[in-house]
Image 1 (spheres, rainbow, N blue to C red):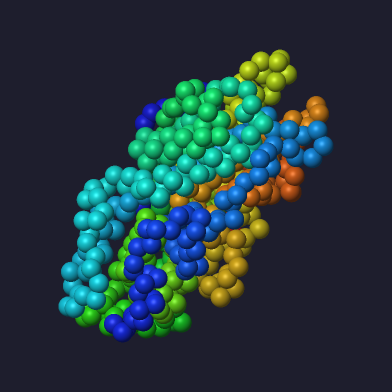
Image 2: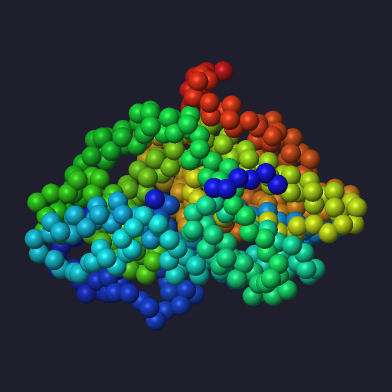
Length: 452
């Protein structure tokens, strides 16, 4: 296989009920018992998987194994994001500066409750969500793994992805203990952190046009009025002279991190009371859409090495089945938001979504591109290959729900058709070195450019 080694205002007179809900840890409750406030599911890529996908928790044995008459699963390739992690030093320091400026403090918050480094390691709840995902996957495809065959785990060089793979395997082997000693672990930065090695992609991220909609949204009159009202109210609630837009965003991120880690954060109530989270969620979606989504073709085209490896593994499975040989039945890869966002865009998941614009905030209440839903911690994509008589078909499950992709409707498509569509999009056997060459002119950078 091809691989290489390698982050509104609130009155001080809060009611005790709100304080208990948003500030007091709820350690006695299990994941299944705890009922999160819907507010918890609106923190973009800092959202805990369980807050937005709670109905995935009770899988049925073999519910993904059969797909109609004579169709049985023969292989699964999974790509998942790592689980909940600690914030990095920038996020911690940004919030610490706000806390230190407060004249009177109605709550205690200690920046040192988070590791003082940039490792962004998995937290306990992040380990648990990956272990549960592994267990659910093993149950849903139980009969695929009745024989002891090799499992493969792929990660980036980041420790949180390696820990995610280990936890997923622990959950998987709770169901199928015969695999406990057989998994193979490998790194591939090319497949799972391709964004970090592409100069042209990095140039696109730095250009002003990439965040033009993000900046325009913040300057819109009605949004500006709402943010100014929020700034004034939060400043009063936190007993600050003032607070900036960027500092409000920092509180938004910290609320997401801390509710994911411990189901509570003292900062959340200051955002919730004035309903500004909907604005902040859309603001962050504008950033994610143009940096990691379908807006720039170079972004999703960079997922080519990952797509190529998935297709190659399925080709090998089909060849082995035809010859009666053993083969890898499960390939599980663990990456980052920067892995999943481009991959979902490459698969055409957002093709029917108009480009996300600052002007469309009111129209996009039910938008498909919502990072909190598609790209939370532990987000996952399962490619399940089925043998249907003499034909092989491919189905896609995103965050454990079947999803149409490319031009395939519910029920999937013949595998050969999927390969042709992916090849037509330049996602098989591509040349990322050429794509990333900064000397090559890129005539059409955004999907909404008027060019042929």
